[in-house]
Image (cartoon, rainbow, N blue to C red; front, side):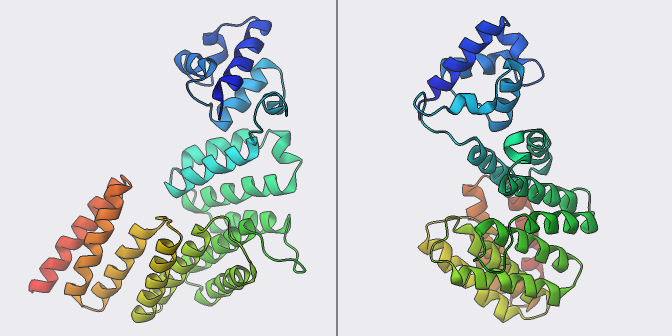
Length: 296
């Protein structure tokens, strides 16, 4: 991807408008970052590019004109960044992007794009504001934008259904949760191709957690092993650390401490590869507790 074309356009527009790099950067990023963007060293984040376009007085699509630069889909870039922040649980940064794009006609005037923002606002509302009622309302609004019983579920709709099921899970409404998870399972069965392989991983992990909460530890581990096989087959490491930890946790609950320890070690190894130190410290502490239980 030739980032220099985007940077060149930004520099040309900035000079036409008659502002310095520092003035363009104000309220967006640092002057040094603008300099690197204009040189083509880096590509601006979706949020930064939108803010730059507003300050320069052009629509963000100006930077993606066919024939001038390779087609860079702004919406897909926003979606990619939201996914990255969501996976890392950086909900505050995720919400910052949502707030910016809620002012962008590229999102507000297109139902699937607005759905993306509503879904992530709902995640923030549940995870940070702890408001399940509002989160559920946002998720239902998001689903209604595209949901049609006469067509197959989209991957986005599956993700939203998983989010609704997770709210039921958090409220100990396990029958409600399984209903949503089964909808996603049926949707995956009906889909010939899944672009985001992690959707199935997330479903299996959520089902495993549900089995554990209901005391079905062996069934939970069976589901976890299915998730591990799927992830390996698809060469996708998403969730593998959590899944291995969960198997160990099930063994701990069954008081099979010697069986739990290898899975805690595997989880630690995976999280080390992913540089997820918060989880590493937690599991190491859990491992120490299990070792004490096994001795005593």
